[in-house]
Length: 303
Image (cartoon, rainbow, N blue to C red; front, side, top):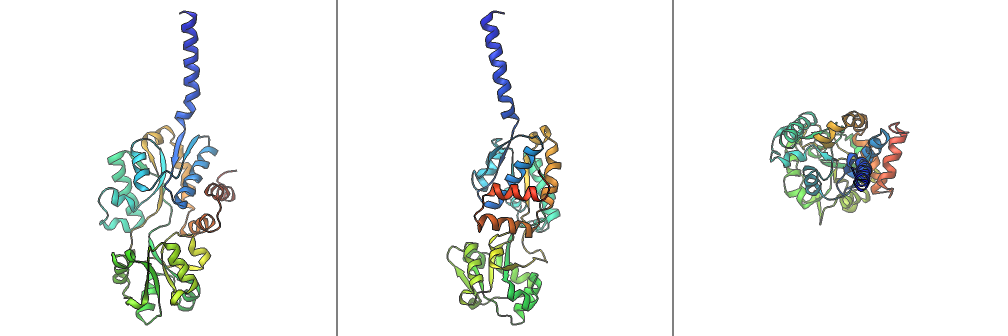
């Protein structure tokens, strides 16, 4: 072996050695919303703390973008929602999606069989459509569930709902009315242009035109600052959208500890916890990484 060839061999070996850690790192990604990003940052920080290096590629796009990136192997892990698997596989009409356990099990099977994507532990929470009532109204009328709400409205309760046109007309509200035995007249609905939940929450908080109920997502941070009570969908009318880390099987086989590392974190994330965390980012303006690290340290997940 000539000196020049030996030198080339040494340089190539060193180059491969330097690149190895980058190739071994887990590429953690997320969608654009603050909840998905905060949860992905938590997972990334926990993996780092347990000796599994990561690359931060959070906030890369909406659901179709992140999903394509995962299936193409451009990213390794991100937080998805169980109910979305019904749309991924044209299976959204299956009643299984309205139950956390059965919906999760279906997502696990469908995605593994088709794509070798593994769904890890889901959070015991749902980011589905929901109704939230002003706390003073909820207390005065003993409202905690949608069944309570249905009885209150059908008994003459004075409700005014702020919602979007899509929510009012595309089936969600009608489905809730059928399931819980109530009907809202046109003068009990304020349909807001655009219908962002920040607007509906703001209208209920301010009592705009008598509004006391808002269309929300189940883990909306805005309901905390607005002092609203999210009503439990106790008859399971809506699909469950439980936040769940999803990972490519090849990466999990390389780092099998990941499943055990993230399990206690995900199990700790109830709807109330997520609303509080989301409020810190969405309302208080803290960074997702700051909130993620603070939660992990306070709860003993990292030191």
